[in-house]
Length: 255
Image 1 (cartoon, rainbow, N blue to C red):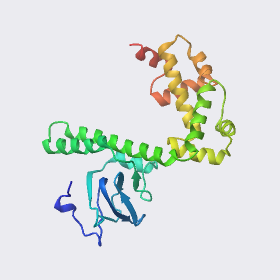
Image 2 (cartoon, one colour):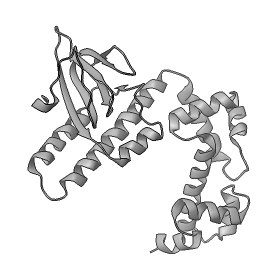
Image 3 (cartoon, rainbow, N blue to C red):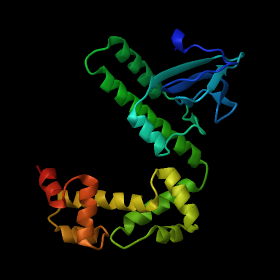
Image 4 (spheres, helix red, strand yellow):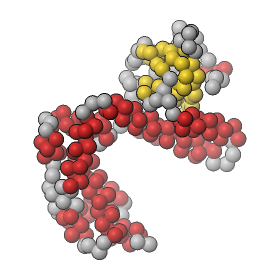
């Protein structure tokens, strides 16, 4: 894909955009730099995140050239992802590999934008959200795959699942996998996007929703089964998370 004229720039001068862009390099290699990063080499399979108000520049290698796909967007949803640390200017380049699925989504977005049919903005927003999710998830998996981190996190998740009915704490989990708590909390949050305490709570909520739908256990029994300890606390946390009381959720989930 080539950029429209209003997006063209001289690499030696760079540019500043007033929107986010996802730039995917599908062939070749080159160099990227920005106000917070670089210059760094970029290769086929790299995704570059461009941030509004952030100076940047990039260009292909003279010997290889490159093929790129890009899509621009802005809005509160992306601002929230950035505010919550999923994306930031200091790490704008993601290694997600060559993905036919990703290229197909870019092409689909182009066709939707060209036709401008009813609901096209919502469709484009859905594609962008999926691309953002892929970028974050695949990049994290690739980062951790060659280390022990993935194994530690997997062991922690199994421990949580097997001991959900107990009053386990993040410190207990760190001890089980054999790590200092501060280090365990850091790698667990980096890998899953949640600190251990929140992950445990979310897992308990999901387990309680399953039990509410598939069993006739009382709310009190489910609270103990899922490790909440205090039934009143369970009802409070469940209502805050789901937007319904446990009994309301049971009625709706059973139709």
